Image (cartoon, rainbow, N blue to C red):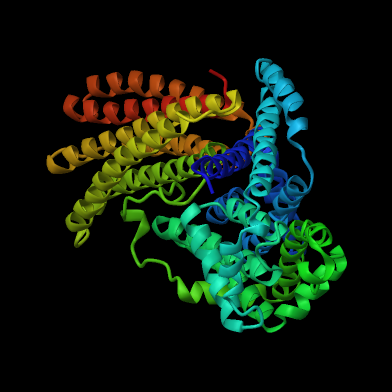
Length: 578
């Protein structure tokens, strides 16, 4: 075998893998938001969840993409882990469509058809409105060109007549259980090394359809590929959060369980699938002749695709009744870390290791910003509590000073967390923005960068208020009068209403949100601030309290008004108003 044929083989595999990736990403750009909405809305029970996972995966040609979306929804509380498991089961069925596309590419010479598709694709890419369709056509064309080149390379290699290769496969006893296990492990290791189940499936189809590899060993390779792809996702999920690791383990359990039961009915099951496709298992080159043998072997690519689909459908039909038990098992194996997550800086939704595409990364960043937003409202709640502890009545209670210091320290920690969250989310969004994104997604990233900046400013405002209250608390002779406390509580109440409105927007759909409510609260805050400033001057002149006390009081009022401005900026960024 010449070095040229080896490079041709490797190059066609690279074309195949690149085509799959490009096609999947183009489909996600075309239908990403709609698919996410479908995933959230159509998983009311295990059967609709399974169908949803199947349809979404068949649409985007990526079970990894479906799994990542599903895990994001579990983290956001939109799906339970049980619903996510049903979606992942459906994704296993949906991903078998790839095998059918490949078997068609292996059986017919389709390379001539890809050139018009390339031509049409380049025209569409340069038209802004249809460029994602062009990207999809290019990805599909690369995939089919890779398959066609792979098919022709396999024919040029004459694998069915290669004595060394035939002797190698003949050295394994086809009836032995050990042989099945060896090829199963080989398929898993190959998939793990290549990081592409599609590439291993293509190699298996080439070997089988050329007559070099017997069908039983070929199907053992396919079963190993099913396990190999789950090992990759489990390793990728090691640095992810608890729910992501549980979902990845459920995926592995599904495939490993399927392989175990199929080993007990291995030959009868394969013979049944071969009968459906019309492949003669017992035909040999010596009894039927070379031409009839190769014609029979050409059907093997369809046998592999049919087995892949039948196996996953059968496995799903068995395990779909045991989803609660699978959920309990993965929760028992992977227990949550026992840390106080509120006091611990850790991104919950953005994970470095778990595989994803740029379009899906934006969804994870949105969930992280929602968590950031909720954390800032909790921080403001602590400031309100700190103000209550600073009152003269509260000071007289036993242990008040210790409680005050403890709460102020927590607010300081939250301020540090808000700084870190801004930097980490912004860094993540910048890395995502380097990828080839749709205009809609680029706009979302710009808006999200503004959101995290404004949310961090809310954290700064809360910390400034806490420091002002702490300064007043340390100067023990200065106390606000009851009227000042009443006004501050009212002002902080308005600011908290604004924060509540902001969090409703961050956690829901912007189409259902009325931004005028936020603007009305902001007007109330501005008017009340102006009223309190005028009243403060009159109260200081009337010696109701000292000038120094009035300054601290107005500092808190002004900081509340600034916080309201930052809330409006976040709402405007999310709504796309500026």
